[in-house]
Image 1 (cartoon, rainbow, N blue to C red):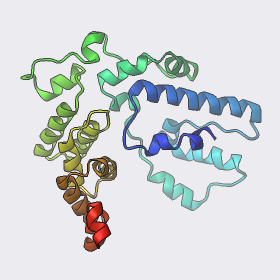
Image 2 (image 1 turned 30 degrees about the vertical axis):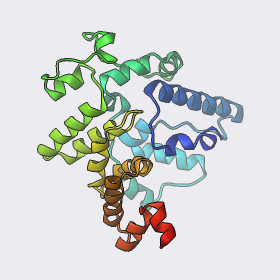
Image 3 (image 1 turned 135 degrees about the horizontal axis):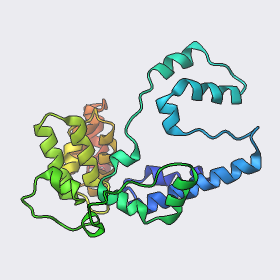
Image 4 (image 1 turned 45 degrees about the vertical axis):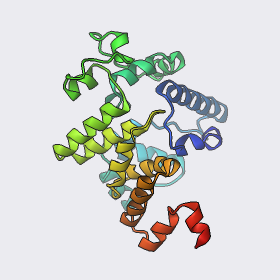
Length: 246
């Protein structure tokens, strides 16, 4: 019920600030566990996502037994394709990890669940990690490691990744450039040039709000690249006056 009531959190074009996300995570998990205690072990099963990814068959077997089902060949084939990805501790940049640490309920919940505390580099000061700007001449990775985080920085990092032919990293950086309150529109355009990337949908959600001529043109090309008929793509993102005239 909690998740359904807050489904807009997952659908919004803006990603909430890290402290808000940490608080939301803490609230959701605590609510679910409280409900689970009331339901009892016969009606509540808790599964850890990282365990599902690292060792899927035992976790899926336990879940299916809970539902009164058995592991079949289809489930086993699917489990063989599961690959553990990076954890949130690895994907958040230093400034975001420090921001997470400021949310006491989230840190307490991590401890209660048996997770280690949020990692923060001890040799960096809090001031550096939460926004001090190093010299512009500093290499991109050094600026990121020091904790700088801005849409312009992430766009530059994405461009550098493209030049190195690392599209996966480029996409990740471009997403960071548009996921906060301030948006680097160049990153939006870059992602729209990659219609095969799932993250381009996030860029399209932001582009729709801008609706400048270059954004309309980029969205039209993006929709065509996603498989929509070219005429339908043009009509979908045409200015309102043109649509009414048509």
